[in-house]
Length: 362
Image (cartoon, rainbow, N blue to C red):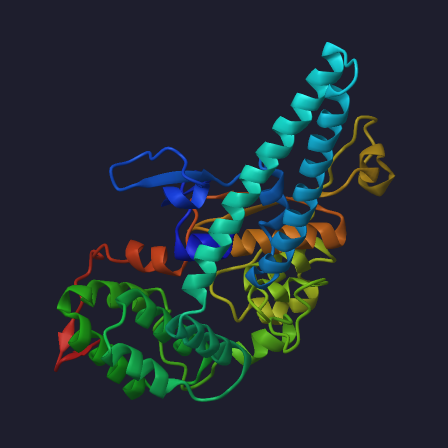
C-alpha cells in the first residue's frame, strides 16, 4: 500500500491508473485513466496491502493457479450436470459459482497488472539506487554526500533531492558549512522559488546541522529501528516494512502499548516535543475497575492520533503490531502523507520571509 501511494498516489481509498491495468475497464476521464478501489472489500487487496513488494510476484503466481483450478472445476461440473437431468436450483448454483470465480479472476488480473506496473517503476536504476542510498543513510555510517550532491547537480527532482538531504541531515553529523553548501546547491539547481520550502524545513528542524550531537545512532539502537537481515516471506517484526527500517512512530506506540514509556524516557527526551503519560481507570459494566473488570478479557484497543499526517507504511506497521500483540489499533489523522506530499505541502510560504545573506540561506 505504501509503494502504491509513493509511485501512483492514493486518494479517497483509490488509485488513478491507466485503464489497461484494470483489464480495459471503462475510462473515467479524458486522459484514459480509471480508478482502482483499494479497500478491504476486495479480499485480495486486504491480504496483500501490508506485504513488502518483494513478495507480490510469488503470491500472484500462487493465486492465479488457485483461481484457474477452481474455474476449471466449475466448468467441468457444469458440463457434467448439463448432460443429465439437472434442476433449475443446481444450474443456478453453478452459474453463481462461475460468476464468483470470474469476479475473483478480474480482481486478480487488476492486482497482477498493477504489480507489473509498479515493478517496472521500481526496477529502474535511478529508483533502486535511491533506495539503496536511503537504506545506507539509515542503516550504516557510510558517507553519502557525493551521491546527494550528484543528485542535486543532475536536477532530477526537487522533491527527491530535498528528501535525501533531509534524511542525511537527520542521520549524519554535519557541520553548518556543509549544510549551507547543500542548500546553496539546491537553490542554484532548482531556483529561488524554492527558498520558502527550504526555510520551512529549517524551521521544522529537518535541515538543521547536527555537528554537536546526532541523535540518530541512539534512537536506532534503543528503539530497534534497524535490522540488517529481514525475513520478507514470514516477517515477525515491523522492520520488513522498509526493508530493514521500522517506522519510529510505530516503535513509540509499541512501547506505549506494552508497559509504557518509563523504560525509554531518556530516548523520548531526544525527540522533539513534550511527552506525557497518564493511566486512566475505566469502570466496567459492573462498576469494577482495572484488570478485575469483565471488560479486561476483551482484546485491548489503542487509539493512535497522528497530527500532521501519517503514511500508509506506518499504518501497515501498526497493523502488524496488532497481529503480533493481539491488539486493535484505531488510527485517527489529519491527512495521509508521504515524502513527496510533505515537500509539496511545505511550498506554502511562512509568515517570516526567508533571509538570504551572501547567497546562503540562513
